[in-house]
Image 1 (spheres, one colour):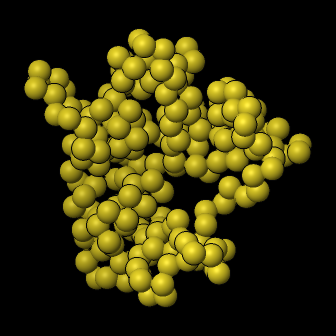
Image 2: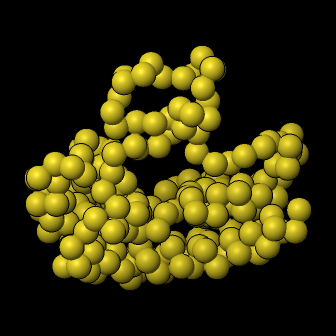
Length: 201
């Protein structure tokens, strides 16, 4: 990533509220069924392996999570406050742009403005809401009924939600995602100016 920055490449990313991100990723990648009796125990085992599950979004940006190449130099695999500071320096310096999935309309407006997307009309695009089978019904992209019980268009239809979790598992997820939370709050604040512009239009 540093090599790309040195070559003048501007990086963009979108982050998500950390608890929602972890639950969505686990549900999608492992085919979790909220109605399964083993779902919560399997989630608890995943959360208990912080070398995989802790601060996954910041870990991805620092190449320590989500199938990043292992470091043969023996560097610490833990995601640290120093990783957060480095990402924040990139955000402050303009070499990285970041938005949030919860403020996706404002995020796209920010990308369009900062990257000078002159050929992309944000206001003329329409909705940035996720496409479901109901919304795309009648188009060729419509999946066959029953094709995937875990997918509904762009969304994972069966996933664990915060309200499904016992307090101890929710607390554990928040504990291992504290740096992701700081990153998310920082990025949310940066996007807020563009969110205000969206509401004015």
